[in-house]
Image 1 (cartoon, one colour):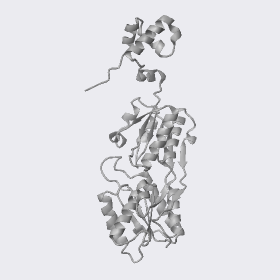
Image 2 (tube, rainbow, N blue to C red):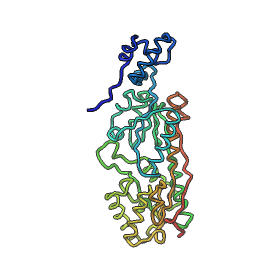
Image 3 (tube, rainbow, N blue to C red):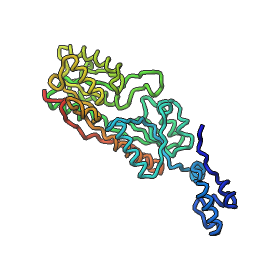
Image 4 (tube, rainbow, N blue to C red):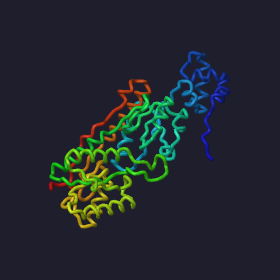
Length: 354
């Protein structure tokens, strides 16, 4: 294997004919500990050997790595929730002068917290599943942590930054209701455990929140019908999700009083509903109105263009980093639990008045 061979402080000391301790003083900014002639020799040796101080050794002295861990999935899709979230994270870490450690899926979705507690980071941003006891373990180890979801009974040292999902639901359903729709179905996100992995296959907290918000909202308007809940199994319109959607749509659209609109847990599922409905002979928005969540680029480019609720993902990422830095500075935890409001409904061509 090819490895970078970093020059050592001892090699610099040998070239400058001084002790390693003198080089250490010089490299840490205490040049007054040596004469101008000695400083010149050390400077020449450092430049010749391209020596840089060991950041790990420095962090052991200062008890600060200037690095935060990010245990949140990335996305390469333009204007997706994940892409916007990471743009906020990157913006704030750059502004604060912090580096990032991005954890791979085996760590993000695994049960162990050891990788988070190995001394490489000053704090952690974690996207939890439901249930997930890792935030409790991490906070109990005195590691500053911010979770990107509302969680109950958190440790005192654990912060939260999350979207108010009831506002997401309220924007979507109020829009449909005001256009005369009363029979409104809901295409669920991943709310059912899918595999034996203790975290990767667990229900998504935002999907659960949107489902619960839908049930509450429709109940408050005396319009809830459990038959209009459509499980899609995942966030993406893969073969299993599409098959599940098709099966349920065939049954629901054959009801004596079928739905006239669907609120979908995200844009990908909404676009799948539009396509499947078209294959069944239903036109959107003439026969069905469909609304999604995320304001993805695919929804902008679809035909019809998708009505959607825009989630302030960039703000979530920015606030998460700022909140984590406040926890690192030991600020009051009640100031480190933040609900981000959802205010933007983008009306396009996939919805119309009944």
